[in-house]
Image 1 (spheres, one colour):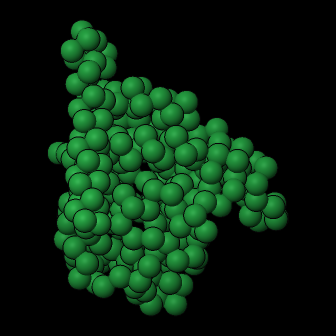
Image 2 (cartoon, one colour):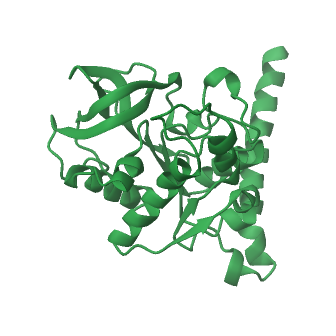
Length: 277
């Protein structure tokens, strides 16, 4: 009796989820609003998060040589903007309120979360729904580590980690010399397996993973040149959508002018994959 009730409850929950997604994606069409609300159609959006900006300015303690502040914050979202300009890709810069409004979010096909450390619960939920409905997401470095007030969420396990499927072990864990390409994939296309992509900045450390993991195509290399078992590049289909997660920040080194051709190719490939191309 207990087992039957549990199965009925699970079936009911799945049915409600399906009905909700149908309502989200097709109700606007029925109501005659397809000109503006048809899901996932208007290209690329970059989230410039005020929650994260506030944390960069007020959250971390400042130390000489550690460039926290608004300039540091701007390097992440502007890094992606400059990169997309370089490949003539059109994009829109959006804010937290746009992500907190599901109807607005659904206008886009790809949302880039450039080290968006601080996110509200509403943003997290809407990004998850966006991906389940067919949207693409690229997230980097510390995305979803904090809530909108700057508090660490879920004991340091990033709120969105289930989208890429591997939890973090230590936030911003190590300084990374390079990224080791472990297998050929959509995101590493055009880069030989066994290549090392120069990086030279900090990354967080995801749970150690086998080199044969099908969703992982790159690993962090520490300052001693050792290939670690911490994933650097994760690409994953999630329901109807696609997710790319970089545990480092390619846009940061791009902003600094350090990004070599392989790093730029990673960024371009990630965009194409997340767009479903």
